Amino acid sequence: MIAAQGGATEATDVAIVLLTFPDLMVSLLLGGGLAATLVPAFRRSPRGEDAALFIRAMLWIGGGFVLLAIVLGLAAPLVLGLLAPGLSEGVRAANIPSFLVMLLALPLSALSGVVVAFLNAHGRFAVGAGGTLFFNGMVIVCVALAGKGSIAFAIAVGVAVGALLRLTVQGVDAWPVFGRVGLANAPRMAGLLKQFAGTFSFVTVLVALSPISRAISSFHDAGALSLFNYASKLVDLPMGVLIGAIGTVLLPRIAGDFETGGYGGARPALLVALKAVVWASVAIVVPAVFFPDVLVGLAFFGAAFTPVQTSLLADLVTIAFLSLPFQAALSIYGTAFAAAGAMRPLLKVALLMLLATLMFSPLALAQTGVRGVMAVYVGVYVIGAVAMARQAAAVARFGSGLTERVLGGARMSLLWPVLAAAAIALVGDSISTEFWTRAGWAAAAFAGFAVVAAGCNPGLWRQLMSRGKEGAR
Image (cartoon, rainbow, N blue to C red; front, side, top):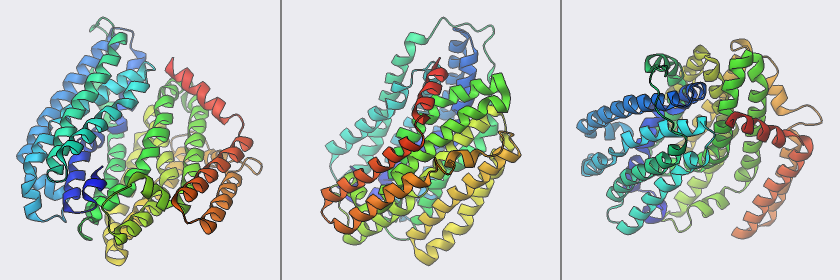
């Protein structure tokens, strides 16, 4: 919608900052650490005591984010300068009122994270995950009504109202499992905050990588921030819909397995989760790399891009999707390490990824422009995933051989579905030029991967579903 209304300009750069800022701040400060801390605590607490913990968490987190919104509002010019340093001073000053309106969504989004953790702990995944649809729907309505002239303010209003709508819908879904409040034996927030602090740095860095890279891209030229964001958001779609769903369903199971069986008990669930997300993400990556023009055409149909911007966006999409398997693996590893309480490896990997981004992204921008920044973004995820796999064997005692088991042996190797999908995609890419024909070849490549993968791992889907059902109990 933003691309269709404004293409890739300074105006869309500001609009994207406003659209993503509330969930960005919540993810930076809470992120996966909130779920990894609260979901096991909710599951351990008897009915009534979990409701008391829920109320305490809502008060602590809601109050904290109200104070944060006030501080950010007072420092609005400075914050906008940090989020998009390449924008002109006049553009930033003109959009401060929109930024202030958008800040209303900050505490609402944080409270939504608590409600989703409560829902997930009770096996109610649908509305928690689907709340984003209400949020995005309200933003789309506001942008459509406003037109091109006031897109930034329309997004700010849509974000604030959408966050309220999302919280309301999720709260209604939580009510049926909200028992009589029992304060006597409910977990204290002090202990949970100590556990949460361990996951904070890792999750914060993962969330920060995209906005840091995006901010560096803003120095390239007007609209570069938008194009980087458009490409990375296309990767976020399968990460949130497919990979995130797998992680959400399996988190309660991994936490429960670790409590009962330690590292050895949690290893089977971790292995199933890793294999599922890596294979699923590679199935998406192969057609995405061969047919980025199809993804750009489907996602940004009618967008006001110049031919140069369209070509650049397709290149960025190709590069960005290479990060998907590594992002997926890091997400699952982070969940498992948090459930196990192994915080030091998370901190080491987080610092390594952050330093690599800050060191190499400016150099890449100077040499190859925004394409280089995206390449560094992908490379940092590769480094992080490899480092985390080594930490899992050497430090966290999940055992050796996880990577080999995920990739499969000679008969069940990931290589076979990759070769099948790549062969289909290569033929389609070489003989097709019409948009829908190329889209059909992309779908055929995905289907080819799925068929061969099912033959190599006939029981993987059954294992995944059985573990998800056990985790929801």
